[in-house]
Image (cartoon, rainbow, N blue to C red; front, side, top):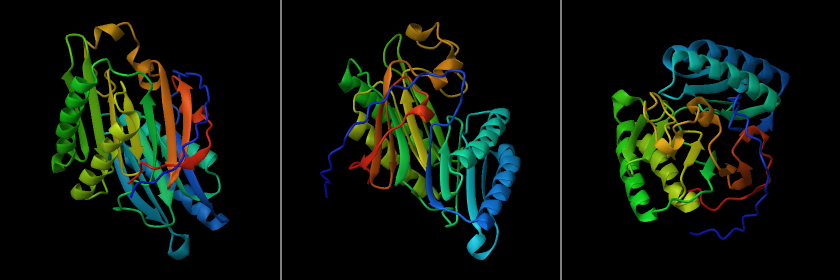
Length: 294
């Protein structure tokens, strides 16, 4: 059944901060007591120490009503050093940004971290997440969408192969000078069938929300999908698109060219902001019903 909600736009200019690899965004719910807070700190300490060695951890700390469940995962193409740095910052920032919440999640370019007093491990979640999309449109939508669909199908198939641990990535030439890059990843606690479902729902929102855009990323609590017209995953191309040849690729990872739209939803509610480039943690927006989430 189609939901006919009016989506109100809250416009906010965001200053690009290329030197900062700060959070893309966070969601915080429900208050906590002192006992839960202490257990959250111990849980975070374990995730910081153990995640980098394998790029993933799903664990818990405490007993009975004071038990807290946690998950941390790094993007599958990043180094152990970058993984460790990202998880350390995520653990610090999530306590600052969600100081008294027992349900908290935080997204970065290189990692994701969450905890909750309810056991969410192994459960698919496409109800909470973030979306970023470039406001610029492609010049040949028919060809672009055909190539994007083909590439998306290929890398989603990669992701559900056991040996790839939920990660799929690839690229395809659109023209002599333009290449399309895409990456998908599921959290490694999901069964393969749930991973496939999560990625299908996420990729389906490309057309629903940011059709014909030159770039988009969708970050759920259980999976992640992204495409762009520049190399954003490792290893980077030695000869990227000529039109971007003089650009610092580390800078591009945190400051995408042109205006972009930023959305965040928690359940049925949507935040929507227009940003110039992005330091997304500075994008302040209001929440409104979001009709596109399955």
